[in-house]
Length: 272
Image (cartoon, rainbow, N blue to C red; front, side, top):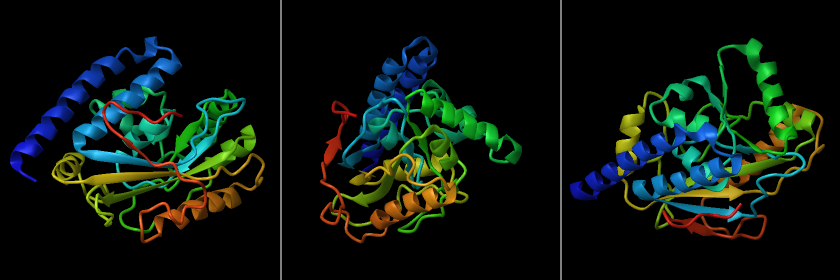
């Protein structure tokens, strides 16, 4: 990719970040519905500016219901958050440090992110209770139970703690599989954000990558009361996602449910 294209992408990203930061500074004055609409639109714009296509597969649940859905996904990159917000603009569980990230933290707070301190195990029951109450209010919550990012075709074990919130709230669990590929269908690690990688270095690598596609597979939900054991529930969700992640081909041919593929651009969003 030529330096002019890279520079153009970087400039567009900077403009969208700054404008988004200004909007989300006032997010507390917006209704929940308006915050979700803004988050979805902003995320789509960022993906387009980065040169990333979003390929959504599967059936998407409603934003709200009598009880929210606990959406759980594998974690590869900070781009995951943009892809998820473009499709599921819902509160997410994130580490406390994200709240202090420039611009990104303001965006996360605007979406109602539930920040947790992973180094304080004593606070975990309270964190689970907060997620439970959001689910009981009818709003879904996004969680990445691996607790860290992974690179390649593998994935980490799902930590079971947050699945207790779904059990206590009587909520369904919606597995979401995330994969990255190139336009020609080949695997790529360009989006991976692991180990000593810095956000700036990762951003530069992503901007310089041609034809990056993020696949988001919304898998059949595990109904409420599937299990009263959070470890068993976590394992079921993990296996559902692993079945997609470990496929060698990125097509929907082996998908266990009817596929609805959609490419999201700056002026097109996926209805939820």
